Length: 266
Image 1 (cartoon, rainbow, N blue to C red):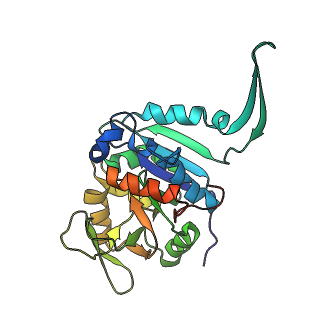
Image 2 (image 1 turned 90 degrees about the vertical axis):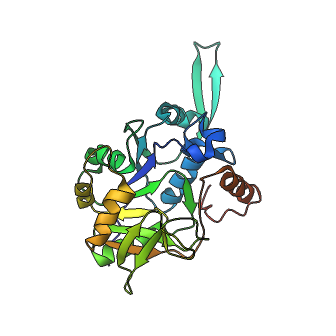
């Protein structure tokens, strides 16, 4: 099995309006809604960083300036600092616990669809294998095992799949984990569904036409039908933050120190 490339880019979709959690998203982009005292985007990045993946490309859209402001001050906010105004406004950094991240923030349009956002960051992917996930979901997934699984089957796309309570869309899987059909909003409970946390080859971008391409409905359905997608089955924890109920549930897990996605120095 091939070695894991730690330089692999991690693309995060962070540009949507978050209309189902408008109580908070009216003030900030959904990925900046906090769990504990940190944005859920930070939690997602920490999951990847724990496994040594620290090169992020974040697709901005709605209120993207909020995310830019966050990272522009990130080093300062994560450090102990003295401001000495008696010495020509001197600033001294005493201790920094900042992360080893490289973060590229890309404006991908306010109304661009998910596929279009990915297409707009193509030059930052540099024609190499990359990972992709949504900016609103956490999991206790082993990212290293996910990448190794992707390398083992040689297909264009690996999608992490889970079996939730049945309120999400479904994947039809073959006996060898081949994805036979990718349906964004099917009916029924207990199906294997799209949980994000993708690994992709750059050829996936050829399935994206323009800004109005919906990654799930237009591109991934076609990739699955062409036989180029495999599923990485995850039986552990996964939780998106679609509603305030979801947000409160994640908040409770974090507050009670019972957050399954918490790893390392989180």
